[in-house]
Image 1: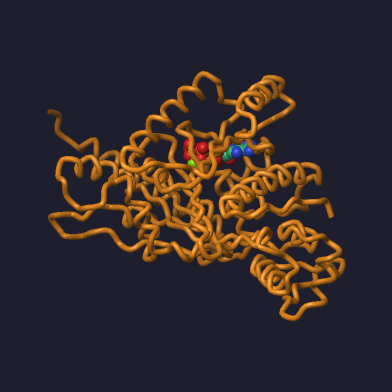
Image 2 (image 1 turned 180 degrees about the vertical axis):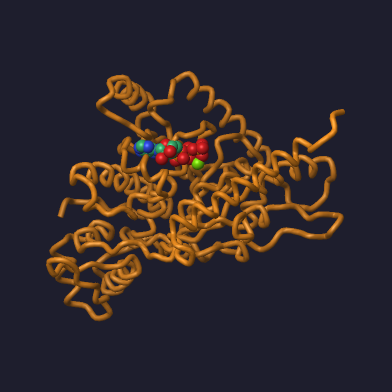
Length: 407
Ligand SMILES: Nc1ncnc2c1ncn2[C@@H]1O[C@H](COP(=O)(O)OP(=O)(O)OP(=O)(O)O)[C@@H](O)[C@H]1O
Ligand SMILES: [Mg+2]
């Protein structure tokens, strides 16, 4: 055996070099006491509010003056009124109270509605799981869903997008919630409420991701041998969520691009599944193989309990209709998968690609800094996807989803 530094120590030292460099970079990017999360979401125009709340523009303008309890908003350039995300929620409350919108446009659970739990799932890397989850969460939050996002990827990129870095900041993560009791120290899991963090987006809370999730995998394997700590792995997420069942309308899982016990546990907890298919990377043979694998995973889960999802939907991501190969693929999938494919694609957009570097989801970008058409194209794509997912959740709650008319 060669003397000198152990490979594990060497790798660990690289890891701390990168950690330090990242913290420094973050400090440069956001001056010392100023982090991205200190800033609220940008304010929205009356037209954007009317879109989010699915209320006609002219009606909304009238309601804003007619009802008590409406927020004042702020006047900006050209005397136009803008509303913060909190104010949009406030407007929605007033409209609901005044009977101007019904449960089909007020996505709060009512007695008997079960919590919607959506897993964004594909074992392939880079198919837009995280970009889709983050943008979907923000669109749905603006529409009034109270959302808990659970970041199961050890890379924690979903949490990063909200400027939540549990590992760097020494905060509890999803690992602490799901972990097994350590027989040596007696240390056990913490209640999920101790790990939840609010974000700068009203209605979105996060259970942050962490590198430590790789430990969960080892511990689960060990638990098969030890027969210890009661709750089997597939129930751990479901059971942890019990505590917050009343507080959220939607739980959203972002998953890593590999099969893991954590992913199976999320698949078990879920009531719906969204499978992003990246048009550029996709070949139909590997899709069939993936679905076969997914089905056998499901069978493992179903040995414990039958699972019936409210919906399983596919969505094409990074889609570019100007590429003939992608166009062909999309019509092939549509003709075979039919209604299981969302009508709206997550179009390929430099606005989103660049967001990967600057960590800004669409609603955090200034529409004025884009060509109008560029912004509208990606907005319509994401908003359309949000509408379709929204409709699936409402149907699961036995409500007839509201059909948009252009206002
Ligand atoms: N619609 C899009 N248009 C252009 N680029 C996109 C789009 N969606 C995602 N990307 C870019 O593709 C890359 C991968 O996206 P993302 O991280 O969302 O995928 P993922 O499936 O979560 O990846 P992983 O499997 O590593 O978790 C990112 O750099 C992202 O900015
Ligand atoms: Mg990801």
